[in-house]
Amino acid sequence: MDKQALLKRHRKRNRYKLLVLLLVLLVASLLDWRWFFPLALMIWLAQEAWFSDHQFYSAKVDYRYRFPEDARCLPLPLKGSRLHLPEADLHGSDTLIVQVKLKASLLGRLFDPGLIAGDNRQDFERGACGIRYFNLSGQEQALMGAGLPLNARFCRIIGEPRLYAFNHPDYTQKRLLILAPHADDAELAAFGLYSRAQEVAIVTLTQGEIEASHYRRFNLDKACAAQLKGRLRTWDSLAIPLWGGVPQSRCVQLGYFCMQLPAMLAAPEQRFASRESLETDIRAARAHNPLRLPADHDGLPTGHNLLADLAALLEHFRPEVVVTPHPQIDAHADHIATTAALKQALRQSQWQPHSLLLYANHLHDNDRWPMGRASDGVALPPHFDDQGEPLRPWSLSLNAAQQLDKAQSLAMQHDLQTPLPMKKRLRRRIQSLLAARRWPNSGEDEFFRKAVRRHELFFMEDSFPSMSEGE
Image 1 (cartoon, rainbow, N blue to C red):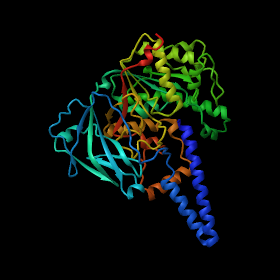
Image 2: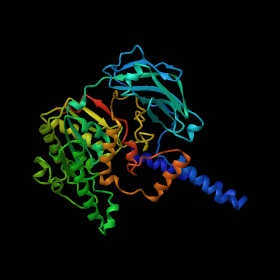
Image 3: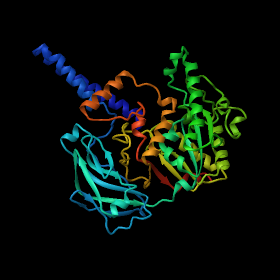
Image 4: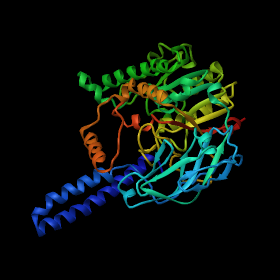
């Protein structure tokens, strides 16, 4: 079920709950009207503090992952309150994932339960009861040395944890091509990666021009506001990577229109103009590109041109690794279409990368993941299908200075500077007071909490069934 269907079902359930609560209030007011306003206030505060999350699954179910057969799986003894593997050789294992079964305490239904290993904290869903996956990447030396102190916060561990260890090449030493459906996606998912990479190119597929009501404060109509937003985000996609050491000569803006990528792939010969800016030509957004591309000839926003552009970019930059959204975990329609377009373009390209690194900026079923505070670790996301392809996580660790630089790259993004609506601002205040949640002072947008972490998480794919299809 896609995210919009899940959201619709979630809102329907909330309406039923609201109806029941209104009936309770009505009965209480008939018995004694003085109860009405205190009860109404308590119900509203509870809704904002504990029931407003977009979480479309039960916290009492296990996450279900299937890892590749070559992943090392080791029992991880928990002696007292320490994790210790004195005889294990984890050298060369860059990604360490602990499978652990949690049971939230009574307070863990009011406050986010979590685990703290050394200085690495990761929170989970309130009321969590089941298997979860804690990210220990970057802590292998402590694990093999004196051990890691492990503290459970508002929960307890059931049974013995298991450690999965993964070996990967050093992707920062590979030629990288990062595909960003919109300006800011490259920074959200991979600023730490691309700022350390030896050779990287960033390609942004769309202008990101829709939902531009914030810009109408300049006395612009809907179309002009969308055009302004598209120009600003086009500039963001070309200029901000320089903060991470990627020059404009290695950045490309394709200029297609937001939320039109799925339709373009479904009808590749048809033109899909912007839904809001009314623009039909993509060439204005390409004015500062460092190379000419096939669609520069006619400027038509078609799937045919998109695939030709991507094939040309693969052959120009010759990446060993392409970084792109995960089509099963990332819920955004443009993100899913970006990776689908890449796999179709690979059939046209003479150059084939060795592997993909897949990221997720928008989940189907939990808008808060990664849960917890900015600077915390990144646990594996909710996943409930262990029958599909095995998933091979790769986790890159970011130190405090790198996290600060990443936060500043987000602060430059125009789309992440929009002030919070009063309703969300008030909700945060209530959750801060009643549920002990915290947000960073680097920016108001939720991505400053979710994306600026001690880890960047990807899933590696090194087989491309789509390449051979139709050959």
